[in-house]
Image 1 (cartoon, chains in turn cyan, purple):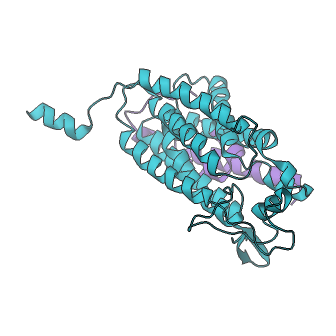
Image 2: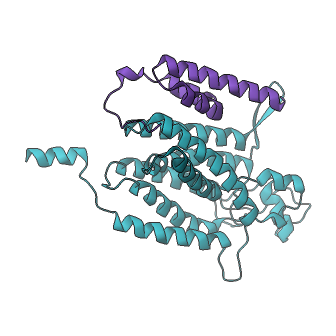
Image 3: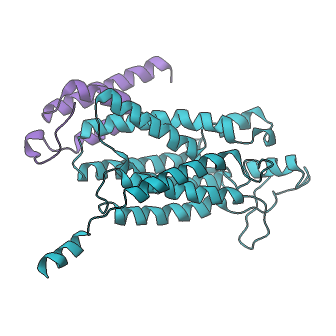
Length: 272
Length: 63
């Protein structure tokens, strides 16, 4: 764990903040390049990007309050630290922000396909900050690749609260590196969606595929995460939401699955 | 940094973005708002654009 990445002139740069901003920057550039490649209107796309950013910030804070387990982190400063650190809230809020902005500026078409390749790569970079900062941590485990966090970290505080470790312990219980699992998934998803981005006939299908893929992954990943509690039925509240999203968008992708041949295959078909 | 300074800086960013946009044949008022809302992102985006008369074959602008 390395919550402070470096210092410049006595100003400490947090790992989480650094990689969060870097992820936003890279995601923004990918969205910009992709929307320009598709010939979408630049001004409208920038307004949409702004709507997405505002919506994501609001959604992230709302989901933090609803779904994170703040009982395990009793210090009030920790509470404010974690506000706005849920990517599910960010995606949901960003989705609403984009739709509201499109209504305001009068743009009727789907813009999700450019976001579908931008979000996973930005998200993967952001997860490096989560891993170094100690948020979004995994559940306790004894697997050989498990990681331990030092005194004062989020996992440490949670484990003391649940009695997994003594308050005199030097490090947390070993936990799954859930942030790195998600980093790997996001990179694979980015590469997959990048390859498929021109293959669907109906605009918006790639974004639906992204929502289906991420919600499905995250539903499973929640079993390996330790930053929110399970209900009596063996699921977390957020998993109910993820299941609904995965089923709905899985069905939407299935109904819009008609694909076009890739350019190289089209050339082969034309010449044969 | 107080809120007045931030507002002033962002307004300046809006004007700068609007000016660059006008120079490139775009709607200055639209780009003023973009510069005000997105700051350096909008300024960077318009700065790397070619003048509008050099661009062809794109979807019509809705703004």
